[in-house]
Each structure stands twice: as C-alpha cells, then as structure tokens.
Length: 260
Ligand SMILES: [Fe+2]
Image (cartoon, rainbow, N blue to C red; front, side, top):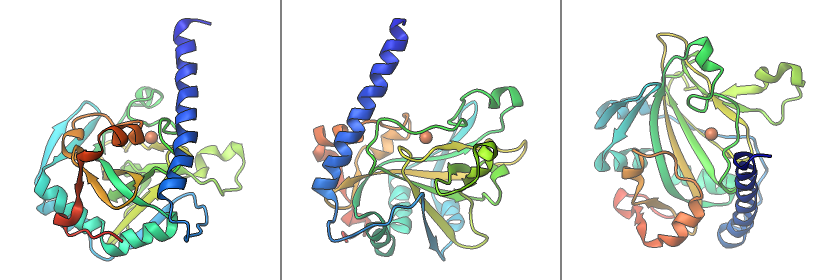
C-alpha cells in the first residue's frame, strides 16, 4: 500500500466522520422538531415567473474556462437573484420539506461545454457519477436549470433511488433536472446521499445551471463571502468554516428576505 493510497483512504474516513458528526449536530441544533419529513430523492418547486427574463437583466460577467463558461454575478444582481428565488413561499416550502432554515454559502452559475468521446470518459467537470464527500447529510444543493429542455443540453443527472430498474439499466436510473416550458423549476437534493453527474451537452448545444449550496442555520442567512467564492472551487467542510467565521454572515433583511 503506497502512501498516496493510504492518505486517500484516511481522507475518505475523515469525510465520513465529519459527515456523521455534523448530520447529528445539525439535527440537534437546527432541525425544527415539529416538522416530520418524508425522505425524498429530490425536491421540485415550481415558480410561475420565468427566471430567463431576470437573467437577461442581471449584470453577469463571463469567464471562459476550457470546459465551462462561468458567469460571475455582482452584489446588486445577487440580491435581485436571491429575492427572486428565496421568497417566503419558497423558504416555507423548504422548511416544510426538510425541517431546516439555511445559510446560503455558495453560488455557481455555469454552462458546461461539449466533451469529445475520449474526454467524456475522464472526470472533467463532475461528469462521472459521484457523491460529494465533505458535507453533512443535511446540506441541500439547489439547481435551477435555464434553457435546458433536454438532457442533451447539459443537464445535471441524479440517481432515482426509488427506481426499481436493475443494475443493467444503470444509466436509465438517472433523471435529468430540466427547465419547464414556462416558468422556473428549482430542484433540491442532497449530493452526499444521492449519486449525480453533469451530462455533457451535445456539440453546439448548451444550457445554464444556477447552483446554490445551502447548509442548516438557525435562521436564513447569506454568506458574506459568496461573491468572492464564485472565483474559487466549491467550499467543503462548510460547518467548520461557518463555525470559525460566524460573523461573516450577511443578514438578508436588506434583500427583503424575511425569516420564516
Ligand atoms: Fe457533485
């Protein structure tokens, strides 16, 4: 057993301990005990208003990476986006479905690019089925697909845990997060517990996804570092980061987002 392999195993074990500990911690400290939840593979919320119109009005700066186009959002536009998504109605929906209020810790707006057959066999941008590791089982990832009418546009795929298809139909067991014809879908799932991958788009096709990372909190908050974090990879071990930098949260009152 070489050192690299041993360190990898140790890291996986550490992630497991972290996840177990903070799943219990979040449950004890933040879970609304009056709410009984039915476990679902994913959540789906429908909004009549179309996010496409809002996106056109927002100030987004494009950052071209080799295999992704990332849209960087500035503070005023971020507040507008949060106001559009985190309405009282939506926050109540999440509280009802999960029993938690959340801290909005990370935002990533991206379009994945086409991958050649050879490249698609490698892990380029989370395009291979995986679980996100250093997170609790209460972390919620929100996905808002824009202009994604088919999975060939580059949808996020998640494993339908309740599917009774056999291992042979493995790929068929994954379902895509797609946009509705009118209005907006907001999906939520736990990437620690549910296998998922980014379906690379077909050549000349593309679609945008907005991703938020939410972690349980005593009230609805938005992380002050959310703007600068867009330039970095997704922050892991969020409870530890939030624990040591508790004053880095920005209350959303100025964004007209009231606590529920
Ligand atoms: Fe992931």
